[in-house]
Image 1 (cartoon, rainbow, N blue to C red):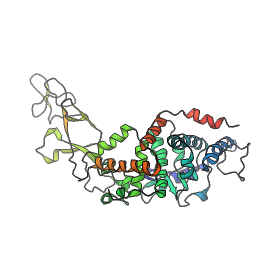
Image 2 (spheres, helix red, strand yellow):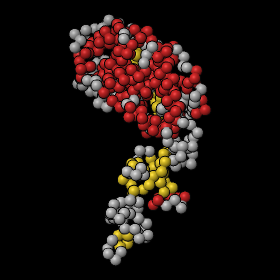
Image 3 (cartoon, rainbow, N blue to C red):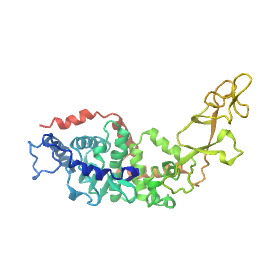
Image 4 (spheres, rainbow, N blue to C red):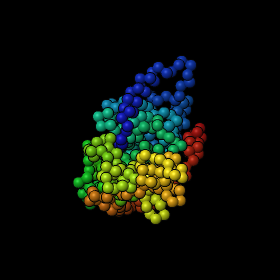
Length: 411
């Protein structure tokens, strides 16, 4: 799975590799080794013994899954400059992976057999993202032939911020597992033709989220190709909160515009609302666009730009009573905002951009979701809603200290 990254991060991986060589001192206390043991037998005297034993007991013995966190460059793409996963981050991701992925399917299906049968055989953690400078993207996850799932960017995981964990790790897990599932049982044919006219494999990373929502995609990456679209609709529905999902649908219902001459320009900024400067529509140059999310609503339903009000027309002078007034005689406050008869600032009226793309984004997203629901039920015997509810509950109700303690208690 890929996602867009800001260009100013392009040199981070190389810089970190260059500086690590010079920061150690002979008296520093070194952490657990990042390199694998020579033998398969787990050494009880090893600094990583507790985590290694926990992984053996909870992944290898139960699911026949090798959970790899000790760096082996032969297991990665040598074209990327990658960093090993930190031990503490690997421990946290390991216990959360079991709790939020493997235990979820065991709960929903009633046994551990589902993931024992269809799950990957290897889970690999890599500390850094795999950065592709030619496209300005980073690789967050990879599913290889239904056998191996690799998760990148582990060292940047913020355990105290689950939205961040979801964005970069756990949504990726469900995305990559969706790939494994559809490699076993094909994506329904009715899904494969829904959005053929709107995929963009070469420029998806520069597409605005609201714009692609309006075209029937849940994320820009979903708009890259049909298989990613399918994995994204599943992974996002499972992991996003209802508020986040509703926001996607809200975006899908709106029209969008850009203030850039070229809509494919990576610097283009898209908007779903506009207003006329000083509410004067007589001059086309007064048309201004507003960023998504910067609007409120009055009691009469009039949309307003939050904390933005009508400015007085210069010059600002004082009338015979000492009141500040603009060139049109409108009373203004000390910041030159026009006031109404009650002395309150007059908000700018905001209008929605017309939805002229010819696509009912909400209907398309719901159609895709229903196909995924039916596929899960008929092909796998799994209720997608039950799966989502279990994931949502666990995301909001996990105790990381209690999960870590499972590892610390290993004797």
